[in-house]
Image (cartoon, rainbow, N blue to C red; front, side, top):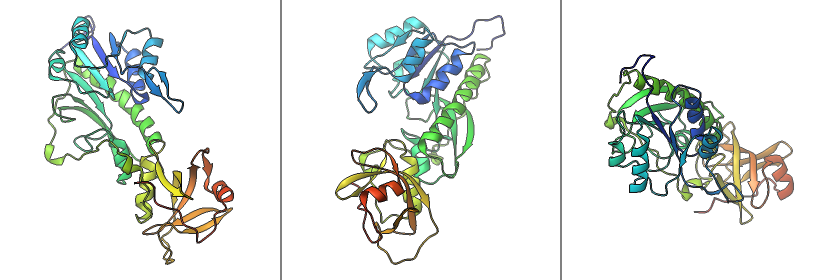
Length: 323
């Protein structure tokens, strides 16, 4: 699709749903590639109150005056007919949360350009940033690639690396990746428009995977090492959270700090320090400080405030999270 300035720009379809996708949509809104149609998930119960509300992408699209399509089934005849009617040259997909079927893939001449928050083929799957943090990675990135029928395995367009900061959690890393990804989406769309977009094959032999998080992934096991618990807390904050128990009730661990390894002979889960200086707990290897926690039915608080309210003392035990 070689174009000069006098030729029409490609007609762009945008598919996305959560906050992560909003910077990419806004980048296109402020460019010559403003979407002709936005596809997002139907209004769902959201937030702590579980009130039915529109997705962040829908809100941004409506504010910009763009038409919005919210199919329950993306690959239905009705949805495909609406896309065919829109006549897109290129589709951009950012965290839409639905599989794009073969018929839809064949419907868009320049393909379906997807933003994925990893350096593909590493961390293919639904939760790449969370698993990168949980596994203690120090670098990640964002990739644009063209969808095919395999999962996250299509030809790569562009990539940009991101260093993971030592105390960064999923919330802050995701926000940074969304902004870097938005710029990468715009560069990729421009490359498609100019007919110079790379389409390099992925090396499947180097692929790693980041599956959808399961409830058991949120279980804090004190017999794990301090570094493993710390990384898991980072990867699961702010959602879905890492959970231990205290007094038979859930204790959400929101932020932790690594300490010098301590060979105290204490058992995993045993409180080593509980005073105005904070809350320190023995793990299977080393000790960890609980900087912020959220007891069941209460708000977020510092470890020090939790010590005061729970009347914790050295020698007490925190229990593993629910299975």
